[in-house]
Image (cartoon, one colour):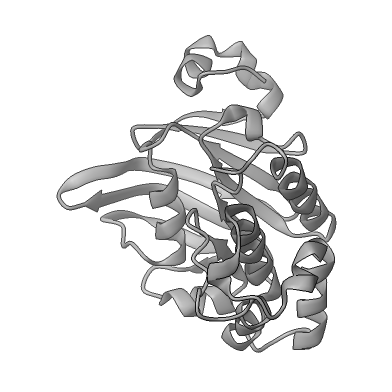
Length: 235
């Protein structure tokens, strides 16, 4: 479905990604884990077209993505919920979700996609007229993912979906992400905390200083103590 091959990305003359390769298959949940500054956000932003690689290729369903604008990648079926949520503070919750249906005006009717977003995040249904700036951090995360879901993507990219959330909100976000996978969507999650890796993750990548140092089943990472030392935990 999605394939990154030997990706090299520089930012202000600093090499951030070094020969990075990864892939996400149909109905797969892939987690990219690494410390802050390891290159997780750079990877997702490069997939979405916000950054241009110096070398390497990105293909989605066999189609090269390099050279395509971000909105064109979204129309192909890539949804993105950034680490900072990226919601529109001057728009209401309902408007934030609806705007995604304008970005990709194809496929299922807009009302079905909007209803699906509310079904995954029922708390947002009662906040339809509330402005984006009036939401808590957890609510903003919910809205960011709900908006990406309303795009009707085949693949969702979630950057640090649990970062900065209260312990009470983390299980709610986790349950919602699990519900999204049951819809048949593929997911690529970037996480800095190994303990936030969902139990239904099918493939794990560990990134350090812009390089993939582990790729495989989440259950097998415990066999690599040098990798566990990098990410600071066990599964």
